[in-house]
Image (cartoon, rainbow, N blue to C red):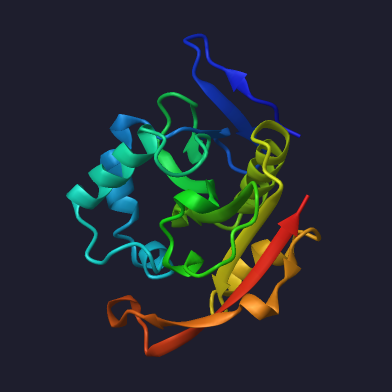
Length: 206
């Protein structure tokens, strides 16, 4: 499994195996990621599947989010997928582990707290889909969280209709369905919602 490496300037990163012609890395957010994050969050196939992300998504929203991550106010640091170079490559997605107490996800509300538990979240730019990249990124993030961040349990919720996202979760034998925590949420009409959607829950205890 990928180990934390450092660039000559000391920037940490993880290598993510993939079929992409460009090398892929998992890194921290950088201040320069604002524009790229703004553009990605305005792609319908990305934004419409992320209930906690506002629509319209403004440049101010992107600035707030990147600033929060740079300051360590939410997820564990290595969460940004970059293509080409771990320092200068463009942001193409995320695979994040957010401690329960720092979660900002609406889908995490009301869940019982579990010691050293994190919420898994992920999205990928459409240009990089279809190469098995997100499965690899999640695998790398999970192993890093378990071995380097003392994560003991990972929780993930996915809308029943999001077949692609469900397929990623279900490809890991460690994730076990937690039907008692399934629920329904009001899906925004602006995101293609038509009332409520069922949200399915999984948990992986290491």
